[in-house]
Image 1: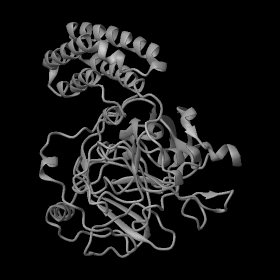
Image 2: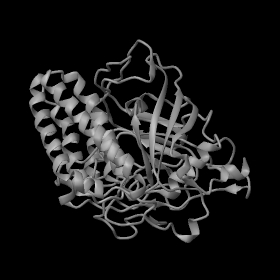
Image 3: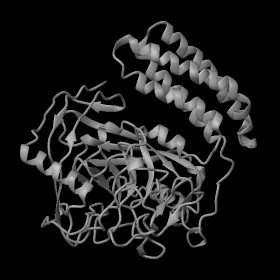
Image 4: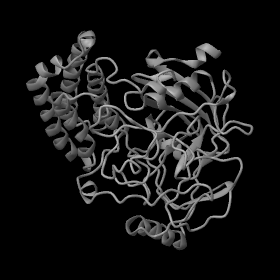
Length: 451
């Protein structure tokens, strides 16, 4: 059942345990919950919901809130602060970072950023096969073509399809040569399915069946992504020795997170499909999968939902993270950032601290539902179990030019039902998180030792 949600602009005011908003001399951070202090978290974001799809049980009814002129003015001030270096509102007396480095102008004008989580995951794979990328790009461009009104979009779709088909025909030999030897048979089979699927899409276009284009495009891109994954031969680098004994995800895994929604007339429960990327964040993703296998998050409430992020992972009691039964201490993991163009992540330092002001991250905060680890602002290696999902773009987080990339460790994206993240509220319950694929990529699983 689909829900059609009208556009609403409003301010999202989340009340946490922290108090005293103030104007600091440096930028602000707000991604770690703390039991010892409290704060008001204020974000002024336009809230826009669109047509949503299946796998979430909905109820009838719709409510909206207004967006005041005062709040619009504050939003403009925040945007100006990002550009000019003006002080911005601080959300926590204990957590505020250095002023964000301004992104290089060429980054801002280099073209539209990739916001689709599937595309981000495809481009994040450690491969360099140009031939398959030349098939991938025009298939992804179909999304832009479908923004054209009516059946006229199909003419543009057909051009995209012809380009993809031509690239596949011309580059098939190079694509096959790029497959890992152990995965070559499966890769060739997938290429066959891709060719058949392209023929089916061509028929859809000729039949002028616009509604059938997007589902078929999704299917074709899934084949492309699977072929690209079959090009990865083993794990591409060595994790630093000091982290080699930790749970590591050497590859990718997927989880389904089932959330029970309270007091929402529009939504009863939802299953979010999340792809975790261990190629670019093996320590971070491995830590999360290990906690999932321990059922750490099952029954836990959503602890922050303010229109900016959705956050959970703070256990009951004084601890702010996962207490390892073998040590009776909080298990923490290092800050882990993969820089685009590098072969291995950097650990323990933000890109700003390393002086990499113009560097782009392999897993950017571009997509709605980007998943990352929360941590103490001044302790880079303090992440444990608290995770957050970034929601819509704001003045502070424009794609390809935001203050989060390189400061927080991204390790996955919500790829199905991500729009429903905006409907979650504090107190909604995570009924379960289950690994549905890729568990065999987890090495050093502590849950098997401790039970």
